[in-house]
Image: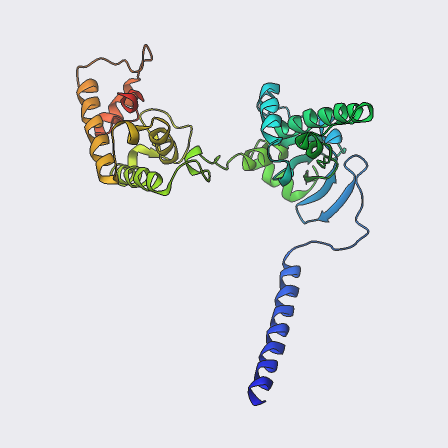
Length: 318
């Protein structure tokens, strides 16, 4: 009985601490749980009002009617069609992520991130309409068609970043430091994130393959830090850690060369670097893949650091 009483006291104390923690978390965010959140005249139902942005549930058709931020990369409909085809095999998960919009002071909206997902949804919505018309005329027992018919395209999660008032003192000060407008700043921030590589996707390869590639790429990054860049768009002769890992995987070096350990891969890559040193040593030709010229600056840096693997990619396939 005494033990039971102690357990009850501990449970009551835990409940009290959990309740206090929840209250502290709620106060950390400037978020309202007011059920009377203002709906947007275009986007519709608001589901959260945060300090820096608003969240809405919006239909795919509404999103398809919005302009894309003018500095976005070009929209490619072929890409959206491929995405729509792939999406039909995973309708059960809905639409992952959020579509990011910017709202200016005058209320104008534009898509900052997610234009190809919006294009994909527009294609799926059109297919839904065709299926609905066909269903009214004839019986359809196709399970995938039935899944698509019930795929929710009316409740897409959208985040809307609100532009800072042009007369706001803090805003004016910040703009003096950065000549980009708010949309450009937000767009840049969103796209700083590096896309996941094929090698790191679940089910693409086994853990042993990843471990071997990681060991070798970690070895070279540690041995030649001056030759490794954090940017995936780095120029020759620099290497990016994730790009190197992906290149080793995509070229199937482990299978082709029968490499079964990280040490073996390091040895093979060291041999390739030795071959490139011979090729690009002093007095040798300045040409890389095909007719692509290698700059004197890139060649000087490779020679200075004695790492030539970033000058071209032919070594991966020979």
